[in-house]
Each structure stands twice: as structure tokens, then as C-alpha cells.
Image (cartoon, rainbow, N blue to C red; front, side, top):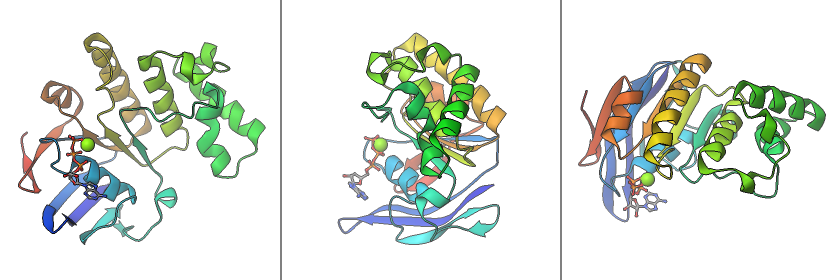
Length: 214
Ligand SMILES: Nc1ncnc2c1ncn2[C@@H]1O[C@H](COP(=O)(O)OP(=O)(O)OP(=O)(O)O)[C@@H](O)[C@H]1O
Ligand SMILES: [Mg+2]
């Protein structure tokens, strides 16, 4: 279980976030809504360890991981603009996390190909990522995020660059993967319908703190 206790963040002498308390079970998705500039992306980065805290703690399975480096948390963060590596093909994008963990390239590629097959993307394995559509790139980005078997998935507006029909399709696909991989998932989105379709609970960032919506 992911647990946020009393998280706080100041920005330029003003309080951005305060008293942020949240528990997310493995396999559960919690949505975070709120106006632009309210601190949603900052909150995800704090959970990932990419942004410092001005107060509070991050725990996983009751262990305090606040001081743990991002790469040692086994958390995956996915942004709206996919952030795939344009100089690598699809297979090597997906294999990247495993190579970083020290796996040999051939073994990492084999696992990447298995993951791509599981996602129905095997025909793209050798394609440059720049040749893929937006939806295909988002699927590859998810495959890449999941290959290291993260305990926590942090999604920041993952579908906002896609058209309405594709959004619905990917919401369903992502929901299935989250259940299958049993991750505690935090979903930041502007779209309340999307949040309700994907998340068991939803909060709004209001005056720097989380207000329960459902
Ligand atoms: N490194 C930083 N740490 C904390 N806050 C920052 C940092 N850089 C910028 N900010 C400010 O913090 C506020 C919150 O930004 P953040 O990106 O978290 O908002 P957001 O809720 O994700 O907005 P959006 O919906 O537009 O993505 C903004 O006013 C931003 O200018
Ligand atoms: Mg944001």
C-alpha cells in the first residue's frame, strides 16, 4: 500500500500543498483532479522522489521511503507527452528499464518482445517510435513503464493528447493492466468522466489540500 502522510510543498513563498494524506492499495486507482497550477504534477513528482518535500513522508507497505532515490522505489511515472526516446526503436524503448537495472541487452530485448506481444504491439518491435501514432506511442510508453514491474504507477494526464474515441479505448486497456499488475495507481487528469471511469476514488486539490469527491 502506498501511503502519503502530511505531504507539504511551498513554492516561491506560498503554500502549494499542505496536509496531503492519502492511502492507495495495490491494484487500486485514485484520481487527482484540480485546476491548472494547483500542484497535481508536483505531487506526483514528490511521490516519485523527483521533487523535494517541505514536510511529510511517503511510505510503501509501511516502510518510510521518503529518503529513497527515485530509481530504487520501483515506481513508474508516465507523462502526457510519452517521453519515449526518439533515437531508439520500440523494442529498445521497452527494454530500457531492464538494461538500466543491469540486465544484458539480449535478455532485456527478449523480455521487451514478450511484453510487446502481450500488448499486441509485436509487429512494431523494430519500428522507430516516431513512426507510431499517438495511441500506439502511449501503449509503448505503458509497456515500458510496466516492464520493471513497478509497485506504484503515477500517470500524469496520460491521454490528454489523444482523440475522444482512443481515450476511451486506452482507459479500458490501462484499467485492465493496472489490475493485472496489481499496482497502486495515482491518476492525474482534467477529465472527471475519465477519472470516474478509471478510479475507485477521486480527490480535488483545493487550497493546497485533497478534498474527497467520491
Ligand atoms: N520545481 C517546482 N516545484 C514546485 N512548484 C513549481 C515548480 N516549478 C513550478 N512550480 C509552480 O507550482 C505550481 C504547480 O505546478 P504543477 O505543475 O504542479 O500544477 P498542475 O496542477 O500539474 O497544473 P496543470 O494542470 O496545468 O498541469 C505552478 O504555479 C508552478 O508554476
Ligand atoms: Mg500538471
